[in-house]
Image 1 (cartoon, rainbow, N blue to C red):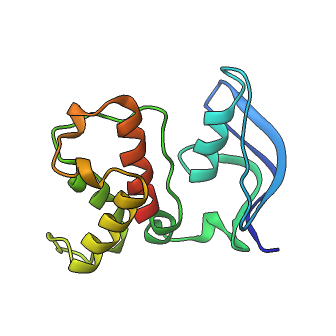
Image 2: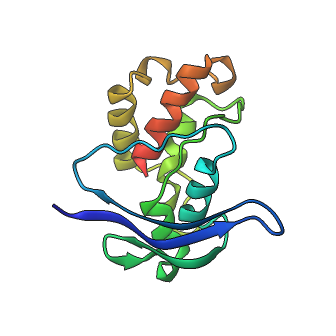
Length: 157
């Protein structure tokens, strides 16, 4: 079994505020893992620390045996996607929103979507049952539909 993500004595937190300390675990390829806890217990802080949105105070985060702090921004963007509990509702279409997941694969000054990117987006939109919504504005969707569009975008990444 391959370890995809490993935290070793991981600590992170906010300046002069809430922190999580000494977290260690591994996520194994092909398994499902849930992080549960009451409001304010540090679930979002954990994910913000893993993604690099919060500074790591101690310990390490390994993704596929590579230290995340050593990856380039492009590599991080290609490997890490977080689906928030809230989606910023915009007036772009679902298809445009899902295609934003392909941004890390664009070349500099590439202002159009390659056919491959569109095929990938359509594939994940079909898997998440959002393909039928592709021409709708994100602002028109229910909260659950927005979540599914966010998952499709994350999978595109």
